Structures are given as C-alpha cells and as structure tokens.
Length: 172
Image (cartoon, rainbow, N blue to C red; front, top):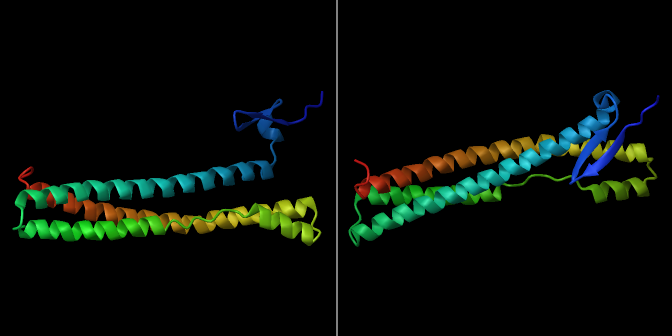
C-alpha cells in the first residue's frame, strides 16, 4: 500500500497526512519550515524589543515629569540626574526603533531573475532557500544589536525611574 505525503492547509497551518509522516518529510521541507519559524521568531524579538523600550521610556518620563512638577522651579540634583538618564533612555529608544533592519527575502526579485535567466524550478527553489538562509544569518546580528540597545535603554530608564521615585520620597 503506497501512501503519498499530502499537505493540507488547516487554518493557516500546514498539516501532513499519511503514515509515518516524518519519514516522508524531506529535508528541504523541514528546512523551509525551520527557516520560516526562525524568521518569525526574529521578527517577534525585534517587535518585543521596540515595545519594551517604548514602554520603559514612557514610564520613566511620567515619573521624572512628576518629580519635576512636585519640586516646582527648584529641582534638586537627583531630579537633574534622573532627567539626564531619561533623555539618555529616550535617545536609546530611538536607537532601538531605528535599528530594526531585519531583512526579508525578496521572493519577487528572485523569481523574476529566475525567469529572465531561464532557471529551472529547482534552481529557483535553491536560490530562494539560499536567500532565506542568508537573511536568517544577517538578522541574527540585527537582533543581537537591538537586544543590547534595549538592555542599555532599560537600565537608563530604570535608573531615571528609581531616582525620581527616591526624589519623591516613595523609596527611602
């Protein structure tokens, strides 16, 4: 009894049918799925870094602003240091937002070049896989850079927040 691997689209996800599905899955099919998952994970990490940096800056800004309102026209040294840290956190937040340079595979360009160069379908598939793996590798560096910027930004925002809370007498 010969079974053929069939791929069924179920709610946006692929489901493989047939006995011993993993044995029938080719290395290329697995690699395609793995690359897609890795690229999605990298995109999620970049979006999370941007969200955390923005949220930390907003919270820090609210507390520093509150400290300045409470102390009026005579801010103390702690308030000025917390303001400097908040400005640094704001600059780093912009850095996190601008450093999101994740590369996406340009499928249209590769397919168009494949048609103009009269490549076979298999050669086009190899070119697409190569481009996806290259994007995955380049994106690792971008995500690491974003993570480092975000952690530095979080430290600056946390410092500004803690100093402002201390200045307000919330922590002693």
